[in-house]
Every structure is written in structure tokens, then in C-alpha cells.
Image (cartoon, rainbow, N blue to C red):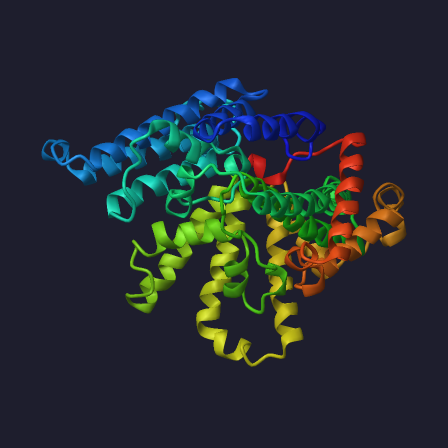
Length: 470
């Protein structure tokens, strides 16, 4: 089920809000848990068993770690590693097994061995997110940063909570553990949540989907037939699409969480306004970058060790970051690309800091957009050919040779939404939802935006969020 789908907007959410409001306070967690399980299992009931299994693993592992008598027999470290291995094993089996087999099959002919058959396992939606979320809970219990949750239902609600279940943000248990106890319905929270949800819905329906239409038309074309101008157009469109698509989901997730009295942390902070790659990662997918920092980078030694080890640690983190996004080498190269960018800034940061703001922003955007080509392309060969055309041109084709794309994807409306996307990717205080929701004109604007977006979502073909498949 997708937040921007007619089913969610016209049936699931209104019915849930009604039942939740009518239910007694003590039963509202149960209502949310059942709704979350229904939301996740809709159209994919088998995947629900995987999530329930991992909930049970992390629940009992954390509970045993907090039981002194049990720890006489099982050390806390053994319990932690058992839980982490089981989580990662599930993630590897469903997401990376076929990828590993494909690469093994490229090597085993040298040893005269037959190829291994692929399993073609369907990837459970959101497994990358809820696996990391479950592991963070168990690790935090091991570290003594939070107490183990004794209620299986409450832990299940934390991991399966439908607003952030399938595409983040990755919510730490410590962030909302106290909020699992409070199911009071606050009108201010409902209002703020609906405002944030409406803005996210507009970003998804108008900007992300419009830019996705442009990017998809260009990136599926024969790469050798794409003129240089169109290659840049496709890259710009995808740069806007992935930001507005993912930040829209985060806005909608944060808004829905707020309606039900949960305060999720921000996941984006205008990343395209960054003046360095380091600054970009402080602003982009904040929940993932902070997760990798706290559970991978710092345990490896962080920056408290030699400069060489620090750089190696950064490289490892971004290799894993790329692999987390997808079981393909183009995602790995994208992660390595950003890792190399951060490593290079260790030596060039002092010079970059002296650059005028315009040049610093231009450098970051050029670097980030180059990385997005690897991210969007179906494979590495396509990505390298596409980048060659972007930077060196395509002598055999000019902009008029790509007329089919012009007719089908570059329309007046798409051009308008591209300009809006470029404008709103920068922090403009007057257009922020904090400003709009507290002004009468802003409230009226938001109401109009929601009404128009809702009508558009009801009458047009919705598209899934990009991060559903990561």
C-alpha cells in the first residue's frame, strides 16, 4: 500500500483515524499495531512472516540480555551477536543471495564447476529499514542505553509502525520509547501532522512523479542515441526526483507519526544547499548516515585512531552504504564515489572552505549529480557511457534528434514543476511548513494544496516510492 494511492487516502487512513479516535486510550496501541500489520501485509502477506520472525528474535534476545540469571548461562555478547547475525542473515538471504550467486558464477568456470542456479527470491518491502531498526534496538539494549521492552506488542508496534515501516526514516527506539506509552489524542499534533503529510503528498504527486516521468523516458533510451543536452536533462530530472520522492515519503511518515503522537526525527535538511560532501551527508538521509556512524563507523574506531585507519573506516562505511541501497555494483560504486569524496575532503577541505558559496555549491551539486547517474543507471556500463556523453558530448546526435523525448516528457507542466523543484530544494523560510501552518494565508494555501493534490492523486495513476525497493 502506498501513501499516495487512492486506497490509502480514501479508505485506509480515514477509517484508521476514525477507529483510533473512538477507541479507548488503552486500546489505541492495539489499533495501531493491527493497522500496521494490515498495511504491510496488503498484497504481500508472506513477507509479514519475515518481519514477525525478526521482531521475535530481537525481542527475546534483548529480554534475555536484561535478565541477570540467564546471563550466567548465555553471555550478553553471544546473545547480541546471535541476534545481529540472524538479522543480517535474513537481509542477505532476501536481498543479496542472488547477487552473490551471480558474481560467484562469473568465477567458478575457471575451476571447471557448474554454475549455481539463482533463487529469484522476492524482496520483502522495507526489509532494509526494519532490519536496521530492529538491530539498533538490540544493540542499544546491549550497550545499556535503553531498557529492554517487556511488552512484545509494544516492541512489535515500534518495529512495524506503518508510517515509517517500508521506507524510513530509521527510527531509534530511544527516540520514541516513552511515546509508546502515550496514546493521548492531541489536536495540535493532528493538525501539524496533517500539514506535514499534505506537503509530502504534494511533493510526491507533483514534483517527484513529474520529474520521474522525464528521467524514466531519458534513462531507458539507447544510451548511444542520447544527445548531451538530454543527458543533462535526465540527470537533473532524476536529481530532483530522488530528493522529492524520498523527502516526500519522510514528510508523510513524520506527519503520520505526529498525528498518532510520535515525534520522528528529521530525515532531510535541504541537502542540495550543502557546501561540501560532508555537509551533504549531514543533510541527506540523516537517519541512515547517523545509523552507520553510531553502529559501524564509531565501533570501527571512528576518527580516534590514525588518519589512515580513519579514512579506511569512512571507505568501509560508504561501501556498506552503497550496498545497503541495492544488490548491484552500480549502487556499490555510488557508495564508493561518495566515500572517495569524503576522503578527498580530508585533504582539500581547508581550500574548499575558502571558495565562494556559489562555487562550493556548484562543486557539491556536480559531484552529487555524477553519483546519481550511477544510482539511476541499470548497470555500470550504461552509467559510464551516460557520463561520457554528459561531459564529452555525443557527436552523432544533437538536441533535435531526440524529438520523441521532447514530445512525451518535456511538457509545460513538467517544466514548471522542474522550476518549482529547483526553487524549493533551497531553504526559503516563507515557504516552510512551520511558517505556513501558523499564518492564516498559509493555512488557506495548505488547504488548497491538499485539496488539489488529493483530487489529483484520486484521478491519476500513482507510482510507488523509489526507496520501496531498497
